[in-house]
Image 1 (cartoon, rainbow, N blue to C red):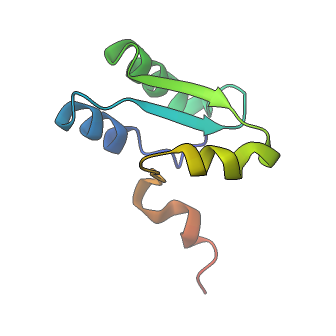
Image 2: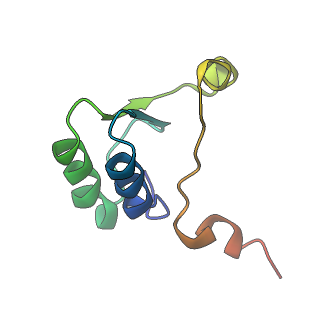
Length: 85
């Protein structure tokens, strides 16, 4: 997970909706250094309700079809900032 991952948003969703579970799909690897500790805190704070799974690009359409809700927890639009000129 990159530094763009909005840990606060995910924590707020899980706190506000205690019957929800969130499975994060993304590159299988260690989260970015600045995000890693906070990412692990989510796993500890919400055991069984927050999980991370790697996902090969070819399986993305099937995963999206199976989802009830899809979120893109991008902290303050950081993903788009670099593309606006």
